[in-house]
Length: 417
Image (tube, rainbow, N blue to C red; front, side):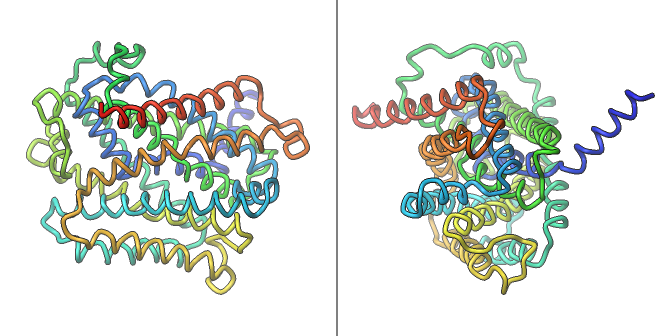
């Protein structure tokens, strides 16, 4: 009986802090993520599945570090960078994050535009309307109500798992590819390296770390409930990467097998859901992509506004009124308006831009990880909550591998190969 009460108390505690970890990880499967994973499966079949296990472990470690720093210090990541490394370094970091995140915001509106174009709706009408909806969700909402909307939206990702099950992939090959590295020549292929960086960049995007830590602080998660917060992070990371795995497998079993190697339009990626929905594949894919894009189009500008405001010392938070955090809300508004406006330029290769934005995430990621590692290992800042040796090994290894992959990719560009 006592054990039952203990479990009940732990479950209630988990439900009390659930949100930041699951939301942050699931937003990771945004338009950029869906299109990148889809392209990975269509272009290379199962050859990128090996990334899923190490990238999930790295994602859990990195996200847990952010949750721990937020709970222990009560401050956001950019806030800590400013306090520990000074305003000049922080300003440069914020500028880099602002540019990188703007590309991600554009990608979310690409998802909105391309998903609704599958219904024959023009982006020139849908993008402005959705931009207003996104703005109203956050500006007129409170943190708890905004969080509930985002948690409900997360449930829609089950669509891609169902599609994978119905696609009848070669399960044995997929499982083997998940635990086995491809042959060495693959890593000399420019296109393959580009996609590996994109997959990692879309899974462990730099913006996620800033957003998660800010969310932990705003939700009021303290070190007292840190264990429950860890489970929030772990559940979110595992679920989002299971979805990512199924997207790659589904596209490998449908697009790659039938020779559709280059996804240029959302309609190409929609073909992957035919085993699940037949003639309704476009509708199912469009709904899933629209949900993911609208979901992330709310979070990404929000993450950027949090990051920049904390880093430069401005008030921030969706629980504050417009007048109390004017710079925060104006920056959020500007990102939405500018991100949506880019989509109104005719003739842009939208899917290629979406994948490129995720590759940029992968290139920028090591810079963010280095700052995080320096901060979380400061005993005067974290006390007994500094990183364990295993966490340091995994996080530093992730950083070194991403730097190595980026250098290798640039080297292939130089050599023309």
